[in-house]
Image (cartoon, rainbow, N blue to C red; front, side, top):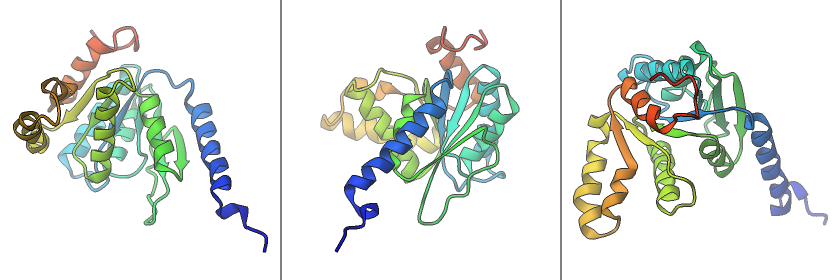
Length: 218
């Protein structure tokens, strides 16, 4: 019986390579970019959706491209705002069991089968991460970025939590449990910054991204 190569690990390697090549070729000249994460379940009536639109536009007008997961909710809001500005609006979509519907506000739309390839594209082309309220997927991206910076696998860059009320329980747990128990260092909590307004995000990025985005307002 001849083995169907489409189901083998060897064949899977070629699919992975094709996604890597497609991502690299599509994003290599993207320029300075900010990756924004957040829940797909927070729609237009959500306060955080509206703030994502506002932030996406502010960043885009400042010369940044905006990268999201390409789906609905916070991702759509950020892409929608970016589309209003002069930067590029990028969606890195993922194939899911319950099909994710790409939002319509993307200048560049890539589709991935493999989460780990998509995650590489998120972090490779980002000058900063902004993490809006979200669930497991959002938490996954947050903690992977923290781990990569903590272990110095990547250079340190801004990891910004948007919405102090939403994130307070998590940051309190880090401060009151993880640090006293010695599972993270006291300085590790400094890898996170918490904001409640798009202006605060831009203010944080202004210092870090000086020289990266020439249009960043002073």
